[in-house]
Each structure stands twice: as C-alpha cells, then as structure tokens.
Length: 283
Ligand code: LIP
Image (tube, rainbow, N blue to C red; front, side):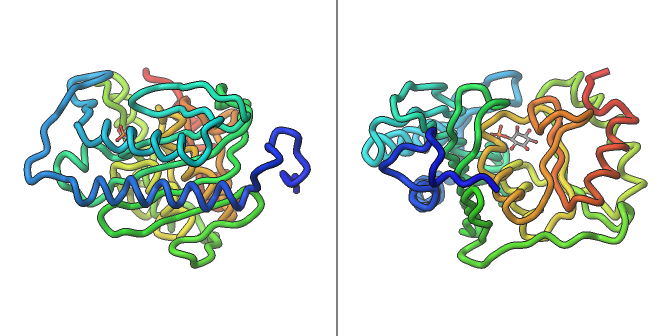
C-alpha cells in the first residue's frame, strides 16, 4: 500500500492524520452553521444548470466559512468549492468542498444533507488527483464520517468495514438523478432495469451521505451518473477505506460519467448490469 509519509507530493509540515483531523473540524464547523442558521423558510438565492438546481444563501455562507477556516489553518493550500470554484495555492494540497451536499433536501427540510470536505494532492484534474483525507458531516443527525488514505474509515470514531451481501438480489441500492430532463429520462430507463434485480432502491438526495452509508452498511451498493468532484471526493474515500470498491464503468475510474460503490463481488455484478443497459449515456 502506498505510504504518503514519504510521498514528495505531501508537504513536510503535514501528515494524512493532520489533514483528516482538519477535514473533520471544518465539516463539523460548517455543519453547525448550516444547522443553527437554517431559517424556518429557506429561499432560493439562485439556480445553476436548471431551474431545479438551486443555490441557497446558506450554500454560500457555508462555503465562505470553509474558505475562511482553511485560509486560517493552511494559508498556502488551494480550494475547489461547489459555489465559488477554484482558488490557487502553493502547497500542493487542494481542499475540495461541498458546503451543502443535498441542497434540495436542505431547501425542503428533508433530513439528508451534509457538508463534505476532502484534501487532495495532484489537483486540478479529478482523474489525476489522490484523495488523502475526507470528512462528511450529516447536518440533521450529526453523524460524521472520516477517512485518511491507508488509515481506515470511521463514523463518530467507530471503525467501519463493509460486508458482502450474498447476491445482487439481496442488495439495498442507493442512487440519484440529475437536474436535466433528458438525463432524468435516461436515468429512469436504467432504473427500470435495476429495480427488479435488487432488494430495493433508496434515493436519499446526497451523494456524500450515500457513499458513507455504503461504508457503514446502511446501503449495500450505490451508483449515480453525473456527480461533481465535490459530491464524491470525501465520501468516496470513506467508502474505499471501509473496504468498498469505488469505480466507474468500462474500466474507468469513478467520475462524472458514472460512480459505483460497494463490496467487491456485488459491485462487479452491478457494473456489468449498468454497462449492459448503457447507464453511462443519456439516450
Ligand atoms: C446532489 C447530489 C445527489 C444528486 C443530486 C445533487 P447537490 O448534490 O449529492 O447525489 O442526486 O441531484 O446533485 O447539488 O445537492 O450539491
């Protein structure tokens, strides 16, 4: 297993454990803001890729807090955030943050939304970077998943290890849908093929939490097309460090085209099914 203790990309002044502790502190601090600052009626501040791809004032405030805290703790690091994009750094470490993952759930008050914080080296290309540490803080129930590369995964300090279900038909599978109508139509077509072959489907609305639920055994598998790097950077490491496989389709790594996560045997079955039904296309 690669040791980042002697990796030249890791600055001398920090360890993976340090980054993991900071990621947890950052995710919890932003989560506290999101929790305590949620108004009775949340307003849409703006939209992005479609009229349903919403941004709230709290998305912006949460990311601003994350950026302030990162600048205070590690001023030479870069940041890539969902709302304010990329800011440069000189240390080689980039913080990849989603200030509220599950924004529509936050807007409606549905209890599945999180703050996701990851530290990577090798940015800006997600296909080239390595996630060193991550934390996902579930705002409503207060749980926090963390992971460090080679250091395992925990939820609220409890170590996690995925268990292999006996068959695909026994698997509880999480998924999600995009904001574009044509993509949603294609995703529904894929769902028609997946649903009868698995135990059941859960569409919980936050990729970061979905990936962490795979790590903690509350989902057996997860797949989604169209994730952004900040949706999956921290949760993907948590899943991997809990023993799950994180992959794309057709020998690709997990990326915007497709992300699949779960115990190795069952992931292979789901990957083959998704490939057969063309789940990495919007036709
Ligand atoms: C969300 C993802 C979720 C997906 C939603 C949305 P956001 O991210 O975490 O998995 O199904 O459509 O993209 O937009 O709330 O940060």
